[in-house]
Amino acid sequence: MTYVYIIASLVLGAVIGFFVHRFVVADKISRSRESAQQLLEDATRQAETTKKEMLLEAKDEIFHMKAEAEEEVKERRKELAAMENRLIQREESLERRAESLDKREHQLSSAQGQIQKREKDLELAIAEEKQRLEALAGMTTEEARAVLLERIKQDVTHDAAALIRETEARAREEAERKARNIIGIAIQRVAADHTAESTVSVVHIPSDDLKGRIIGREGRNIRAFEQLTGINLIIDDTPEAVILSSFDPVRREIGRITLESLIADGRIHPARIEEMYNKATALVEQQIREAGESAAFDTGIPNLHADLIRTLGRLKFRSSYGQNVLKHSLEVAYLSGVMASELGVDAKLATRAGLLHDIGKAIDHEIEGPHAVIGADLARRLGESKEVLHCIEAHHGDVEPTTVEAVIVQAADAISAARPGARRETLESYIKRLEKLEALAESHKGVEKSYAMQAGREIRVMVKPEDISDADSVVLARDIAKQIEEELQYPGQIKVMVIRESRAIEYAK
Image 1 (cartoon, rainbow, N blue to C red):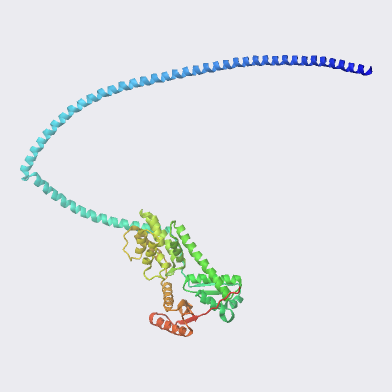
Image 2 (cartoon, rainbow, N blue to C red):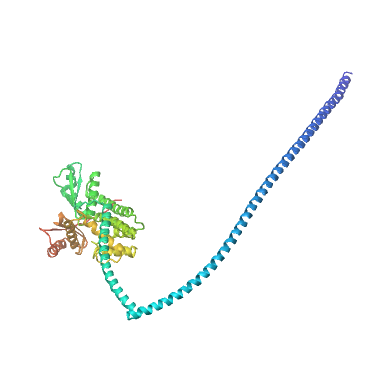
């Protein structure tokens, strides 16, 4: 019975719960439907309201646009009416002018007829007067014209000759004044310093103890240095200084750099001397290239050939009568440019030709002939223009100058050389004598290099050991000395030293 009651209770509870749940859920669903219906009605009313507002705004906008369009149409109509009035006024004005022109044309036609009648009357009067004058003068018109023209010609010829003489004199005075003015302006604008070239360089050393190390055991270091560089190393009682002497400034500069490098390094022996010499040679070559590039940049000359730049840099170590050739070339370039600008000709061409005019002096010791011709040939091979070549050839009168620029370069060269203190004759003659001495020694077979030492009182000749034997060295020294006596003029005596050196080199691997 207990189980029956329990089961009945459970069934009754389930039935009650089912009905209770059904009524509660149905109530919630009913309320939800009512709420959704209310929201839908509100949204519909709001949409209607929004639609009405947008329609009203659109109608207002259309009304405003219509009003503006009507206003614009009114303005356009006013403008068209005004333009129409102006056109009518202009048309009336043109009609009045046309009537006036017609009247004037009629008046001109009438005046032209009167003028033609008067011209005929004048021609008749002139013919009558001409006949009377011919009768009174006893000659025809052509005869009178010939006499008059002859008298006028004589008077004009005399006056013209006097005027020509006066004009030529005035032009000559004016040309001289302008030439002096142009040269004065050029010299004032280009104020260059001049320093005389020297044949010695002084190298300062930290202490006199280094002099013994520079000389080396039994003089091997100084001997190796002089043979390698070709300059004379003077070590005397001068405190903390060693003197390098050579007429060739390139050799002297290489020797100076070599010696300073050896002093800074502290290791002085023949192998180290040769190593430092090679480095100094490379450094001087770099300086030569930089000097050429700097000269081209300073004068504003573009597109120079690389070989021309290098040859131009070599002029830094060349001198002419004591004047540095590169500085002289720069000064001539500046002077030429200034004078060309004052005369109104091609200043760039004159500047370029002025810079290159002495380019042949960098190689005149290697090629026979005047440096102007040598320089022109070099510039021609390296692509310079005909105008520049003519300026180079003509700057010393080897070729007659035919252009204004060539005359300007010639004048600038003379101005630069004529500055007080710019040149010295003695140094140039001395250098030429030493160069000739070296060339004479090198003309013999088997000679590798030769160096003039001791201010030209000694010539050291290095020979090729495979071509010249010890016995041949003695004969070669005698032959060179005899040739010097026959061909050169020199004070005192010249010592000829022939050096034959054999080297055996091997590497431990």
